[in-house]
Structures are given as C-alpha cells and as structure tokens.
Image (tube, rainbow, N blue to C red; front, side, top):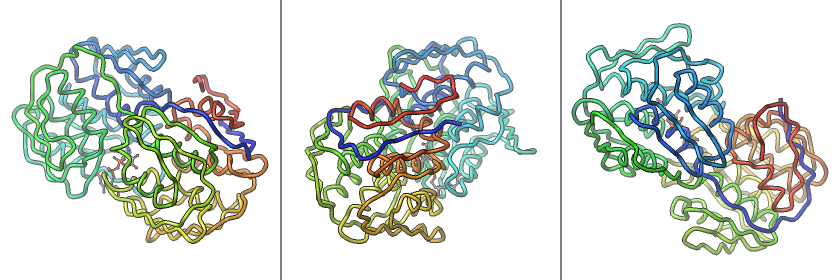
Length: 427
Ligand code: UD1
C-alpha cells in the first residue's frame, strides 16, 4: 500500500511540463501488437498503468523497454499466451487487448478488466462491436473468450451510446479485418485521433477519427517507420491548471494542447481566472477571488468527467455554491466523503450525479483514501491547500495516472512524499 503524505499550505510557483496522455498511451500499447515491425513511442508518461501493460506484453513474448519517456515495443516474436490476470485487473484499459488480439490472432481469452471503481462500467458495446465484425463472445466465471473462426469482416457498427473504449476496441479489431467498417455515433476524444494517427502512419486506412463517423478499410500489414509522439494529457493539464489557480503565485504549464481543454478553460475563465493561453502553454496568474460555476460532464468536446473531481477544491474557494452534474458517471462521487473529512462544505447525490460545493474558508489535513485516480487528484490538491498534514492512502491510484507527480509538485514548491513499497520509480 502506498501513501502520499502532504504538508499543506505552501504557495506554488514555477513551471511544470505535462506528459503524454494516459488514455492515449493505454490504447497505443495494446495497438502496438498489431504491427509487424518494432514500434517506438515518445513522451510516454511514467505511470503504473504503463508498467502493468508492459507486464502483459511480456507474457506474449513481446519485449518492451521504457527509458526516459521513450517506450520501445517489439511485437515481431509475439505468441498466443495466457495473459496475467493480476495485471489485466489492475487497469480497465487492458480490455484493449480484446480488440488487438482479435485483430492479430482472430481470438483472445482474458479475464474481465479492473480499473477505476466509478460506478457500473459495462462492456456490452465492445462485445456488440466484436460480434458485428464476426466474432463470437462468451464469458465463463469472469473470463471472456472471443473467437472469429472465419476471420473478421468489415461491417457497419452503430454505437448505442458514445463510448471511448468501445470506439477504440472497434478500431483495433477492424484495422486488419477484411473490407470496410463504418463506426457510427463514435466517440470524438483526441485520444482516438492519436490512435488513428499512429495506425495510419503504419499503413492503416482510418478516416474520420475525431468525428462521429469513422471509416476503416482493413489492411494486411502494419509497419512502423517512425517514432510516434503521444499527445499531451488534457486531464493532467486540467489538474495542474486547477491546482495553479487555487494555490499558485504564477505557474506556467508547458506542453498543453489548449484546443483539447476549451470546455475546461472556459469554466476557469468564468470563475475569474485570467488564463494566458498560448499555442502550447498556459500561464495561470495568482488569483485571489473566484466565482461559483455550474458544470455538466459530457462526451468530448464537452466538460470531461475526469476533470470534475480535480476542479472541486478550486470550486470550494468560490464565493457561492457551485454545482457539478456528472452525466457520464453519476456515481463518481468518491471524493465527497473524503473532502468532508478535510472540512469541505460539499454534498453529493449519487442517484442524479449532482454535487454541490459550497464556499469553504479553510481545509485541514486528514487521513483520506484515493478511491480512484481522479478522486486522488482532488485529494492531492485539497491536501496542498489544507493546513497541516494530509495522508492519502491507496496512493497507487494516483500513481496509476499522473506522470512523476511527486517530483513535479515538489518542483513547484509543494511538500509531498510517498511511502512506497513498490519497485516502480516515482520520479
Ligand atoms: C474512458 C476513459 C475514462 C473516462 C471515460 C469517459 C480511458 C482509458 N478511459 O473510459 O478516463 O472517464 O472514457 O470519458 O480512455 N458504456 C456502456 N456500455 C459499454 C461502454 C460504455 O454503457 O459497453 C457507458 C459507460 O458506463 C459510461 C459511458 O458509456 O456511462 C461512457 O463510457 P466510456 O466512454 O466507454 O468510458 P471508458 O472508455 O471506460
């Protein structure tokens, strides 16, 4: 068990550089097994999810090496194998091996994925997509078996709901299928464009990524010619923006794609933060008073569900009631009782996904638990704002998704340590 220990109250200043997007990376690594050549990724975040995906690759005799943000993967000696269930269960995105293995071997067997506990997260749309492409899918005691005995064939897939994961899995299965697949009501997240860019640069024919209709014509082989640089993490960017506004005396955030963050930055501007937005960096000036806001989470380009929790501590500084409605995951309220322990004036109704955040004069340190990644981000920011010491248990959930977070925060003048019993470098 890892604990994050925060001595709160320091003002923050300086510069921070955002890493590659976690949600791209966790799709790109499984996608690498579709290649017939070694592949290389750059600006890979140093997060536990990457290390767990490398363990899964190893089990298939896919060698990988991770050094200073560069990840080399050699899938040329890949073999079919039983995938390690502990690593599969450590993150939800391990389900991308379903689509990738179907694409590569026309069959796959793996345990149900784990990942953040943010309420019910079914995979019916993924299964429907695989079946539409010609696979049969069965589940026995938590193990999913997929098989396309007659190969995968292009088809029209209509997504009943907009789903990032199901759109990505459908692309992975279709990219080497015979014929043309059309995904309608596809998710439009930037991470999907990043995946399509990586695959297209290897010879795939994917058109329309970033719109709600994606057309994929299957190809026989995928061959990597150059390094793929992963896009900047918009959720990490939003987290540092919120942190800098709450506690900063002037913070410059580098390697940001402002176009991916407009729904978020527009809310911060509405709160009264005079953000100075450049082409690839954002300066957050010292801000002392904040207006309350209303936020409703939506699929991209709407306000990301992953950012409602990191924005919560800043909302508690506003001079009135702020309201968040999480329409994507109404049960994503794990941060609420933990923030109450720190003195925050906050209430949640998890039937409607509505959270009301009232003005709070002062937070105090407490022992709290990071139930999931973004809950952990909210607690980290609150701990930095609070008087005294905050101990966050289950801090592994924070390290799952935030690149070298301890090092980055301390460079901004925070006082954060990790009591660590894992072998993974923290930064
Ligand atoms: C991805 C992100 C996660 C983010 C979420 C929503 C990754 C690795 N994770 O998760 O950080 O919080 O998008 O932006 O990229 N649904 C179904 N059936 C399905 C699939 C989804 O009903 O088969 C529902 C979900 O319960 C949810 C909604 O669709 O209410 C959107 O979920 P989805 O976009 O699939 O989220 P993930 O891909 O799991």
